[in-house]
Picture 1 (cartoon, rainbow, N blue to C red):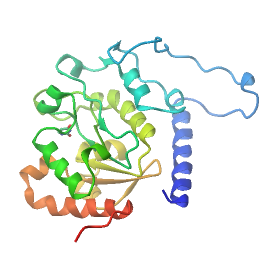
Picture 2 (cartoon, rainbow, N blue to C red):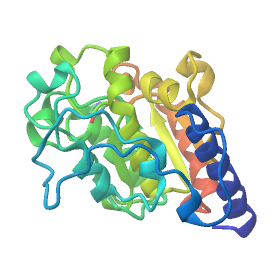
Picture 3 (spheres, rainbow, N blue to C red):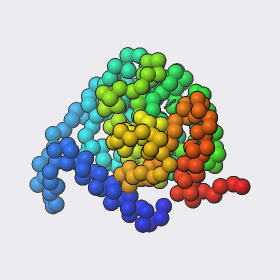
Picture 4 (tube, helix red, strand yellow):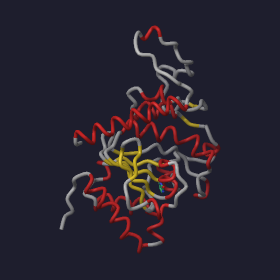
Length: 254
Ligand code: URA
């Protein structure tokens, strides 16, 4: 990444981290001997050797616990066999995310559908096949990028995610993004864009331009499932993806 862009991202991430701390009640940091700093209240530690299969109902770790050298493995371990919301009762598989942990580009969708629930992998159904074509048109392989969702479990009947479900699940997505630190994020559809950008603006107004997510350029665009119903809108999505390609220095093949 360009040095100036890297510095901007670092400053924005630090600012976001300090805001996170403030939101969790930390109103000052002590510079000096670590021993002089009052130890924050410790959450229940992940038991040594706990696997991703461990049942977990504990609330998500706070940002300051999560901020130190975040990794996808740690996030997966903390998520465990999640039972934080009602979707645990109806899912077949929890769908964490898939792809390259060093991806330059991350796609964030809404929630697993039926095929994803059955296979435990995001975007493998019809909409997923369209997303794979979009990724290929951008000159990436699916395995080059990282793909995940706002919700890790399928809402029954593919209904919209509920605010409570988003609230419970999104800390894990935010930690995934912190671990990945991509050069760009593409939000697929209303829920992904509105959740990460903390806005209620419709996707039609958000798409087509970059927004800032903790120093990372974020491009909202239409969801592939919407494109299946409205193929004429593929042109807009392709325009959005070309902007992402330009940002990443990828030349369009003539
Ligand atoms: N739609 C999504 O938003 N995510 C998936 O994983 C599949 C379909």
